[in-house]
Length: 185
Image (cartoon, rainbow, N blue to C red; front, side):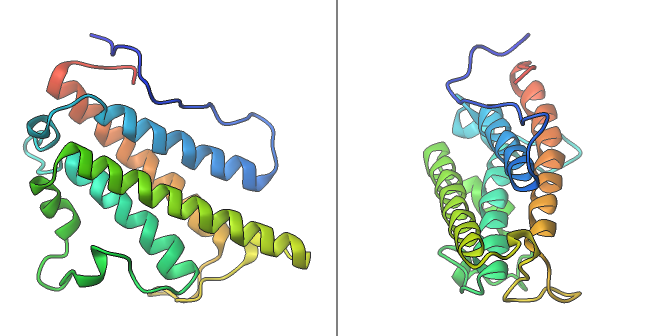
């Protein structure tokens, strides 16, 4: 069974563009893909795993909202984590984002994801604008908060987001098809 028409716009990345446009277009494509995979599902469906995995579409949405915040706001800019991430005891549950999603409604999960994406886009727009004003290459900007292996460039972050989203879009394909047979989303 193929999916019905989606209300979520998903633009194909351009075949020829500058590096920033190419990277952002791929991230945007996969963000929209994730939303399409979750569109129109009930809370029960979003919480349904595909055994033997415990992964759910609900957990995936919340995890990707966390990924947006941690890479762009926390790592790149050096901000403190935004709610709800700021109060999580990650040592007690390293998969809190995945587990806690099971208690949230589809509307809450989608809103958190959409808000996180919008915040990340505002950050990227500002970082790119500031770099252009200074005549500096924006993609070479290093994180204010280094990770385990040291500072990371914005270029690396955007490539990592493409990797993170594309990997999880594949998971979402399998989960959605198992739920209702929908494909080609």
